[in-house]
Amino acid sequence: MEFLTLDHSLIASRRPFWLVLAIMAFVLISCAGPSDDPPMDSTTEEWVSLFNGESLDGWTPKIRGEMFAEDARNTFRVEDGAITVSYDSYDSFGEEFGHLFHNVPYDYYRLRYRYRFLGDQVHDGPGWAWRNSGIMIHSPAGATMGIDQDFPISIEVQLLGGNGADERTTANLCTPGTNVVINGELETRHCISSSSATYHGDDWVSGEILALGDSLIVHRIEGQEVLAYTHPQMGGGSVSGHDDSLKVDGQLLNGGYLSLQSESHPVQFKDLEILNLKGCMDADNPAFKSYFIANDPSSCGQ
View 1 (cartoon, helix red, strand yellow):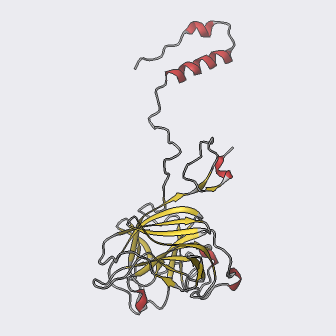
View 2 (cartoon, one colour):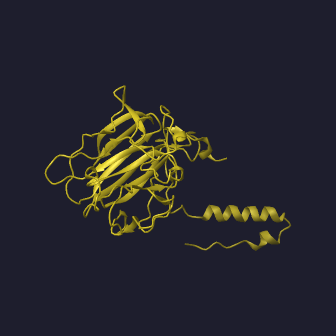
View 3 (cartoon, helix red, strand yellow):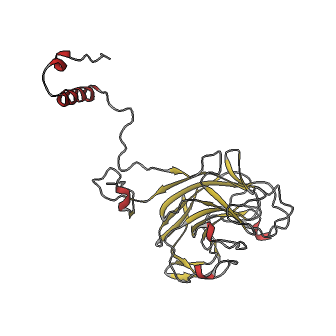
């Protein structure tokens, strides 16, 4: 690369100093090479990691019987680069269900994750909770949960592991304090099975959730759609210890917080990343993305 030499006669002339500076700036910019970072086009997906692989920064626990942000027995921790639900400090489970809340709410998004079950269920864990966990979405903030509340009022993407012999689907739907619509009919069953395969053993399983506000939610496992439903809303039972004023049956759930569940069986989560589908939909704005589905004018900037 040739070095730029400055014509000192330009400075010595009587031209205004601001003009000299402007010419110098133009010359420097003109001589600069292209940026090392290629510009991102509107189709480039900007996935954001929700877990840094080292700490629970950005996450807050809520264990039944404890205040929000307390986790006296270190139920949620990071081990081997994964968010780990562990019961090695428990003598028994005692129905102390827990949830680890991410601190940012979302409404239109794709969430990718990997999970696996391992080890043995803690003593006196419910039979139905063997190799059972979940990802809760469209939830109120964890700080609104009662101290003895068992589950957040939310939509649960239920994750199950196989027993080595029988069929047991995963990425099912459970509805603590909620209902959904399937095939045009209000569905009030608490848990609904997906069409997924059964995953035995301790291998990692990959899943994805597509959430479009209060209109559509889709569950995918290993790239395949296994369940879809619409109009998530408050209603039904299967949740206790909550503030009744926060449960308005029939009210649509158009977004909220997500959390990882502890239900008495050790489980790990990793590769948690989210693609926000809500943003600037002005095609002439640099913040525009062609995959946005919902408009957020505030993200367009000035």
